[in-house]
Length: 429
Ligand SMILES: Cc1ncc(COP(=O)(O)O)c(C=O)c1O
Image (tube, rainbow, N blue to C red; front, side):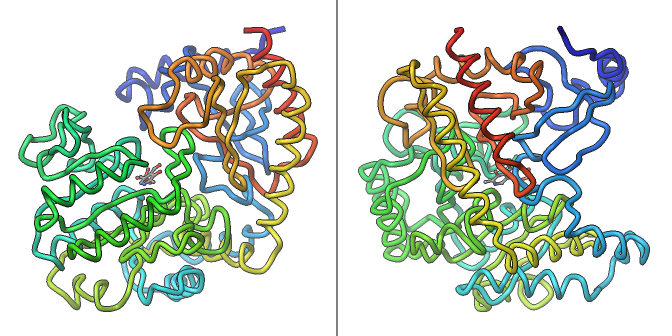
């Protein structure tokens, strides 16, 4: 029996007349998996309920922020109190201080944090700060890492080992794309060439230390540490983009797990507890170069918004004080065991899991560490089963390039159900 999507379809028709493509962020358009976006009415714990009353176990969790699940009981009181006190002041409030303390408690190498309203904005600010501090123009990034949609980061590599970037979006001037150098992940030779050619011009290197935007591409520690060393030797700042990683696997950064010692860390998602928050953190000597103390300008009407700060601080309090990460690891192990069992007959079924981040890579061979090694057929296999996952009540990110997230609200039965359903659908391909 097929789910009824009448109301979602009506809304999409209307939305498509009102908003480009009917959506406010392109991946929500379901372009990769076919079909139309589902319109959701509410989230409850690990579940989403759509406007036609269908229920789904949600393994997207708003792309990562909802580590405690939807509208978690544990943050409700703080958030509703904040709501009753006013939606925005455009001025200082105690909630910013509380959230800043929570964030910095998890980041021993950082003295200061600045809150902004998205991950994109956090990264933009970090890059401006790096350029302001070093007086240099160029940025180095890695193919397959996503850092938001600012001009200089919508770029791909040209041909050759280390080259100036080529814009991947219309509207990005060549002069801006050309200030970003793009190289593959997991490639020491490309690192050496990039620093040999551009070292003195590099203001910063930006990397997701655990890349999670083109699959889950865990990097070798030696590669990350070589990068750290090269940045130091050449006077470039190392920016760890932890918009996904930060507070996801432990209370703090992934960088600390691998002893990366970045100069700046960008955050988002979890630190906003489901509200629009990004952040940038680092040592005082760098962070105090931001206005009003320093010459690098950055500002925001809604930055440090009191309701958002309440959601962030309350989420971080739970993460600091309850056993959330152990619970997530145990759910992850339940998923592994169930998929190992249910998928035993499918020899190309592989997946990568770190804590509560999971990525299916349904192809033979080793799991990739760089985006150009991601198997197109694996992505296609996932995309093909996505509509049937929905039919069976599982909402996953609508693209095989994307990772899924477990939340504290999921139950062992729900993750076992997902594993068994995945195995069943994949085996029928
Ligand atoms: C690593 C990383 N950096 C930056 C961003 C941009 O964040 P936002 O979508 O909040 O602008 C994202 C978004 O997914 C991300 O994963």
